[in-house]
Length: 79
Image (cartoon, rainbow, N blue to C red; front, top):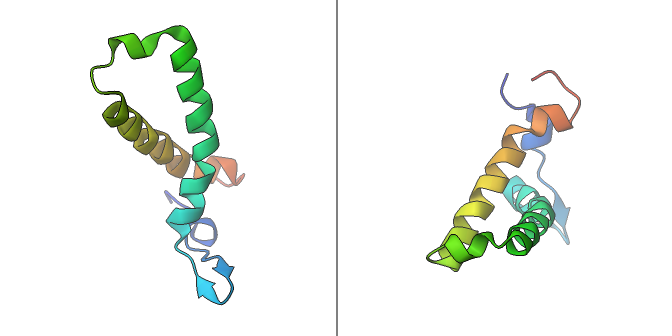
């Protein structure tokens, strides 16, 4: 089983509106993204990047994908 259904498909509710689960995981991916982006900036990596906003967008999608694939491990279930 790739994803634990109780984790991925839990729809949080705010003021009577159901929010998509991807929104919750997208917000959770922001912290590691900002930390990694800051570390890349300190290392001088962005001097090698041609289009920084495009790179940052792709990098955020990669961080979000890694977080989604790591959900079973983070939940303590069997991966």
